[in-house]
Length: 439
Ligand SMILES: Cc1ncc(COP(=O)(O)O)c(C=O)c1O
Image 1: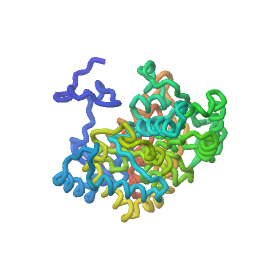
Image 2 (image 1 turned 180 degrees about the horizontal axis):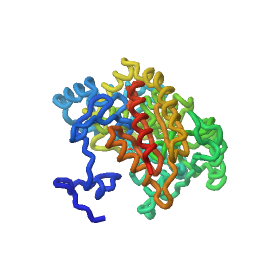
Image 3 (image 1 turned 90 degrees about the horizontal axis):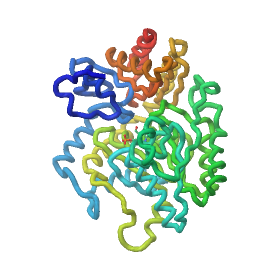
Image 4 (image 1 turned 60 degrees about the vertical axis):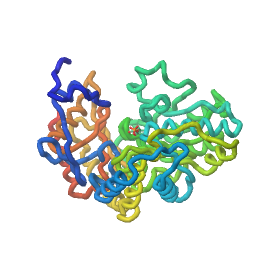
């Protein structure tokens, strides 16, 4: 495509973006407050996606703004290798408490991708520390998204993300089948009935490789980036049972489900299934300062702390435990705990899900699936043009003042948890008008 970028837009190579399209016809956000963005023409845009799933508390939350301002003026940066600063320790203690004390330790990263790679490295190092150095294989799942590092990409299951980098993907990785089945489960609210048995595919991989060679299984409790795939009833429990049976670590990637998306602190609380390790990012700081965190059970951490003196894990980032991120994380936790955010999310989840399912019957809609404050609306693809229809819905909705997210031909909605009923009506009203007029 030969389009000329508008002035001043050419140098920035935008991520996961059709750069040439965008630069010919930009969508520019200039400010945000509460549930709304504002674009450079002054239009208000209702945030139906919490940014990129990362702003559960709404934008420009005054307590977070002031905590970050105070932090930057006090301690702008502190190295985290062989040095510490108080808020990193305070946040870790608070996060531990937020898991009910079940996860004893927190390793900070700068993003979700880094959190995933960290979790995979911890899993490998854990087995090695316990004398099980042959446990090196990793198991992900088709249609999983675990960020864009080489580890996350390798255990991830999205073809488009992997194709170009095939030769550089990690060796020794297998994938469980995904659980998406429109024939059996279309238009389900909550966990679908069909597909629990797909967890048993893990037994086949164990039979093939032997459990003594397998380190970990990693899955998103609810897959987001690949278009809202909700686990079948009992699926995660079954996966847990099988991992325990075979001494395989279970890692949940809670980068989007952590911090209230399902109305509980974490998805593991919602599904009542406990992983050995889980990753978070995004909502951890309300998206204000980039940060990820990996949570581990006490027995994982203990395995590292009983070895010889010295650095226990050769891993870490310049920005692990960044003071500004810790300040944002502490302020976010205060708001979660003091302002009834989870209760608020629970109280509107039913209304939100009903509003989503009310789109059934509109042109091209072939599935609607919902859980917590997440909705996936799948559209029939145009012949030979996967993604084109939903992308058009995205641009039209934006022009009409609603931010939605699309992946392939699936619309994914995940608004800030502070959304109220009127805003839910506004979001679905706008989306419904777009769908009615979509070719
Ligand atoms: C489940 C999951 N894991 C990992 C990531 C990667 O996070 P980041 O973009 O912060 O690297 C994402 C991002 O959307 C995600 O949804």
